[in-house]
Amino acid sequence: MKKTLPALALIGLFATPAAAADTLSDAVKADMPSLLTIYRDLHANPELSFEEVKSAAKMAAEAKKAGFEVTTGVGKTGVVAVMKNGPGPVVLLRADMDALPLVEQTGVPYASKVKALTREGAETGVMHACGHDTHMTAWIGTARRMAAMKSQWSGTLVMVGQPAEEIGSGARAMLDDGLYTRFPKPSTVIAFHDSAALPAGVIGYADGYTMANVDTVDLTIKGLGGHGAYPHLAKDPIVLAARVVTALQTLVAREVDPLESGVVTVGSFIGGTKHNIIPDEVKLQLTVRSYTPEVRKTLLDGIIRIAKGEAIAAGMPENRMPEMKLKDGITPATFNTQPVTNTITSAFAARFGKDRVRQLRAQMGGEDFSQFWLADKDNIQSLLFWVGGVPQAKWDAAGGDVTKLPSIHSPFWAPDPDTTIATATEAMVTAALAVLDKK
Ligand SMILES: [Zn+2]
Ligand SMILES: [Zn+2]
Image (cartoon, rainbow, N blue to C red; front, side, top):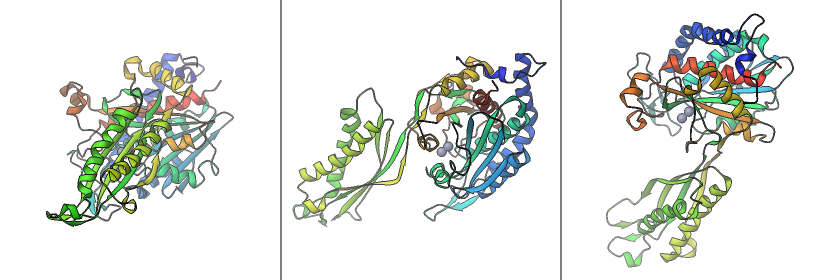
């Protein structure tokens, strides 16, 4: 708002602001046939988390061609492409590269037929059902434009191809492999995610918290097994676990401030082998979501407290108390900071028009993009925005009711690649220029 509009950053000696704005749109439009060829190739050849070897090689080759200094194999399969262009801030632009273990059912001509083994060793189809192929393609489009527009910005651009977002580990792996020590450390980090809840070409963002803390919790409810006919000789963990599941519902309803947000979902309840056997234990698998550290603590402390309390109520002996384990480490909440969120979204409004830029509510999904900010949150500004991908005709047919449309992670999710990638490329360039603006 207070900042110079990004269009102004594009003004050449002889151009008016309107003509300058068109220059970027026109350049992206002219590049779309090439970008769509890349997109269809990436879409047809998806790779699972930490296996993004071919995808990374394609991004690295394109960035090199555009004039970036490229390093591969950062955090296993990550790509870092650096362009130093005079004094000024360091801006990191991220695209994640991994696909999901799903059999694609979109029916598009370039649909994936790839098969692979999951981390658990099961055979599966592989599909870009989260749209990370649109992220990679727009990343390439952005690298090309930023290289072509070098005379219009000053600073350093660090473009990152991140592995393994879907398992919440890739950003951490890149940081642990020296992303902020071997390469210029950013003062601003920016990423976008395609959205199945916005029509193609519309940009969305939240102010402040934008994605949630994600904790994956294993809860073991112990009992004392025995014959189903003699329950008085056993301690039944099935009945106890059922009570625990019900009591856990009071955590968000009764213990979290009604103006805060949290989720406790028991997604899996595994126990027993046969009708007439009381088992020894029941295993519960939970996903726990929050934004603030305080709510997160209330939920995690509450889960084990309730489980133990119910075990005591059931008369379980001291050595058969429930056990809780956090799996895979937390994916921390993603936070859009000020003033960069204002600066960039004002630049979006100036470029795309207010109708195409919408402030939305935060989501309870998770995103490890947060790690790039948390690595030094007092000195780094951060923005993650959404770029709508739903083909306009499908959006209209559903009357804008997203419950009638496939969500991301659905085998039917097929974004409109042309509009999504063109908008995302223009938006990423606009965002970078808003920070790297030549004063
Ligand atoms: Zn995903
Ligand atoms: Zn994703």
